[in-house]
Length: 483
Image (cartoon, rainbow, N blue to C red; front, top):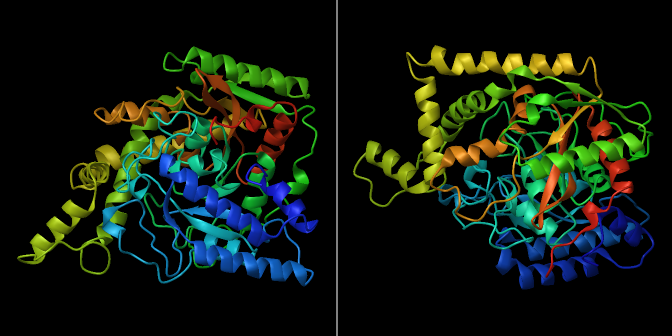
């Protein structure tokens, strides 16, 4: 049962081959057996899962149907879940139980999805390796000595190890797509505003976006269908109709115009990954696509712009964690200043502290114009590059990451080296565009992903291209040894 995709589970439940309760028990036992190797979960919700599974079975017995009805999933541990610890991977929120459900959690529960637990993540979603978590690093099921990517590394590792068919993640600078690439999954960052951010603990409010992680584009379409939609509680949510993503998967790629940016193939890209990217281009050409070289001239400025804007927003968002209202509080504070300093100093890990300090500096008097305002201007130039490119092509294709996964601890002493792993993903967040990573091969036994970008609200186009590619390749079917 653990090898079934979401789509196969939906068919199996509809055909009464097994019940949601049976499937849930199998997967909970598998998590208990295998997750100690991976550390992909922070909290398991066995009682809730079995209750939801029984309710889903009852709904099916009463004639209801739906692709997510009775399907087991997990949530990245920054989606608030009522009465369940929502830690954000941080000591600061280790004892926090959310008093309400995030919109994404509520929507998926209403669709009948079964929540198995909350997955491990980089602290406050800050990281590219899932090593900054208060609960310890997550390990890559393809090689337990390597990172799974971040910040949604727990969700990615759990799905890749077949502990469950799909999970939610969030993407601020590539945190769905990058771990998807490093663990051989399909991961989709929707257009900014497509999925509600209400109840999703914020890192950088103008960049964060929730999305699905699964083994196939077909499964991502099913999960995104349940997550997407306008939410009046979220001021950044966009009131745009949600198409039937599954219905559009089988469209022809004949005449599809694919742009390959020349800037992607620089010295920083592992040449073996470049070869796999071009092999995926050839595969899509066989399906009728036409390919042309394009240019994104301002891409070189993306990392410095992102690492000013994201920390600036983080320093503002994380100011609410002060030891007074909720979350961690230091022992025996001498006065209010001591309470603030020690609660934050003890509650936040080094990477979070680093980004708060960078952000506070960039927003401070005398530096705002020099750093934050300039970064926002670069952001507009990057968006303009994409708009010009999409006048010529339908999608943009390139590598998801410049390198395959690296060894645990290899980049801990050099944060900038880890930041450079986001070079291909962060531009989509700065511009608010949808992006998808799909499996495209292996380097030294470690998975490699190819990234697709599309115009605003064209998630369906990305899913269609990825699904057609997956009908003609088998990379996405490979399973890590031992899982």
